[in-house]
Length: 203
Image (cartoon, rainbow, N blue to C red):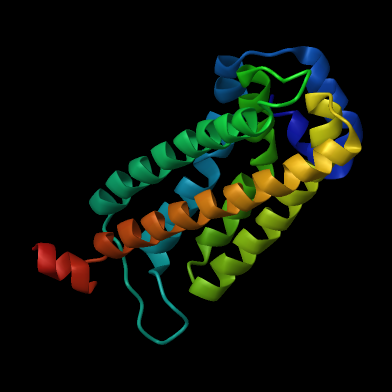
């Protein structure tokens, strides 16, 4: 639930045990955590790109209209919701050879909570300068990696050695998913700008 946010940021070891003891469902995870936090980068990006305008660090800015911004925001939101489920299924697949293989439900819930820092880093999109947003993504990614390494043994019930191997593999695949997601997002927001080359071509 949303109250786990502070615990994951402040004392992840304790919080992972609390989350594990709750035995929540995937629908509960989405309704009380993912759907709420995933809205942060969407809303911040919408405000930043429509009010200030997207820029790559130069003097040129590319504003997105409200109509385009809302449409792109919905697509961005949907992509993040799908990404959580995708990473959860990746974790489930990686654990296929474990004697005490965690359930698919546990893996998706684990992925949802791991993504918490990435969702929170979406506040950087209020100031949509490329390098600044990349800094926010890097901070979110590093802390998500920290949660991954801290939580894998305790939450999934495996040894620290297996947890380290599985965490490393998950992180590599997760970074790949993130890169694909970012590429799609950048393309979408670029298309939403009325001054972009792609937008003018489509018009």
